[in-house]
Length: 321
Image (cartoon, rainbow, N blue to C red):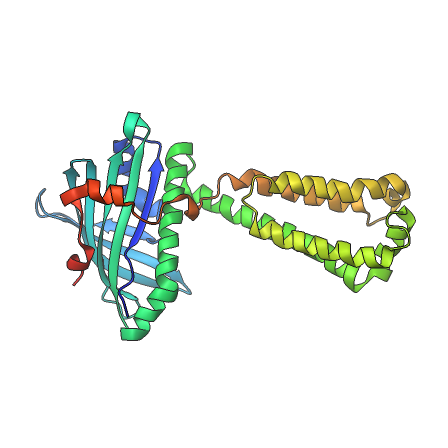
């Protein structure tokens, strides 16, 4: 089995070097934005020149946690700053046995910010099974978690929104998106496909829309609503999604109320459902801009950047025993 590529993540952040350095090198700040670590504790150093040793803990759920140790060393480079590290865990539960990598900080031209990049690799436990598990599941998730964390850091620095707030807004956004998608699927499946005789068919007939073709038009509308519910979840980040939600909700509700105003007298009527769905869509649209995106990060190192690093480059395969 060929060795998998090291994990690489790069992101431009509109900030100054000292601010970014503080948020990534001070443990109490670092552990707030990095999903890979639940807590980080620096140990006393024997001298200013010695590497900085640290302990880390990562909670993985169900009351379980991975504990490990590491050491890091900071240095200046021709293009900015560099922080190298080694890390590892002796816990049999940890898939990662030991690893190494770096954080690189390079100023952008004209003071536009800092290019923040990481590259790291590691050795796994459990022989061939561990290598396959890492290749198929763990490494892709680990890389995505790193990229998501980088964008959470960017939001914290650029927009002054702490990661704890970002996480709550992210959970709220996805809850609203899933609820909105579920409502579309329900409205398409239950009253239009499964139980049209319960009222939807009569409503369509009374409006006069699709006269003579109601029994075929209603299932088609139901299928379209279900597809739109799925699209709501898949494309929830698209800019056009929430204006589109409003247009469709109003487009399905207002004609029915215009042609049959007596529907407003019913205990369960389209207007209340439409207002609720509009509110959910509004909440999802407003929280979208605060949700970190792993896809915002660059995941492969450009050849030009690698050449520009020159002898600042790190051979991770050599540094991992």
